[in-house]
Image 1: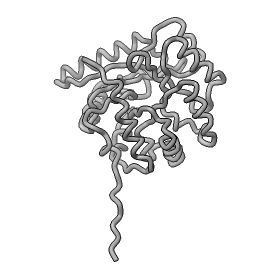
Image 2: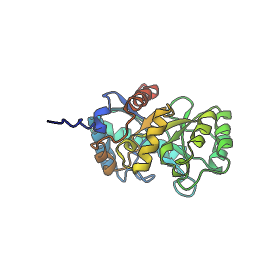
Image 3: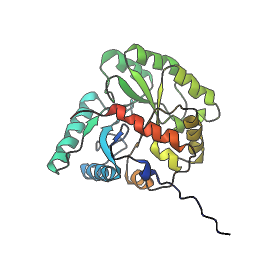
Image 4: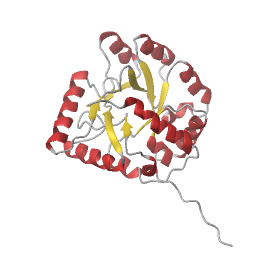
Length: 247
């Protein structure tokens, strides 16, 4: 008797030709992402070949770590666009930011307009060590200021893995979830992949992002998907069309 094994799906096979990426670190030299303009152009070209159509890059803003400002990020955005153009790559590219939820973020809310993914959608993250003491209050403050918080890679916060109700609490508070695509191939570990399956099955993942920083991330797009919940993953990928922007 002959048994035929089911063909494994590679992550890159799920990327549509019109994919809008909402999470990456492609402005060179301002955070832990791209180190040079050459690297940036190379990564954008490689992602374009995978089906990435538009890029909304999101440099970190973390007090005393990556002290990026609106001006620094926008200058970097212009530099990348000019470099793309000079290399005959007319690729839609814009910058937002990935804000750390901490006391400095609360201060930013009060004094300046945030860099958003589109309209009032703002990408936020937490420390991987532990959530901020006043997390729900910060989410509420964000909404009160007129923004919709999109939490980056909720699956990577290990302190929630054994308590899914904490994720439910954040969703009820009005927080949207953006999953990292590489979580589906086990790039961040088997535990992260397992929690991704749980969140996808519960319909809690709203959007996805590459979170590309370097070549290793690019290489991982050739990896096999190890999660089971492919249908809701495809739906989340399609949801990113919400962020399509005009040139």
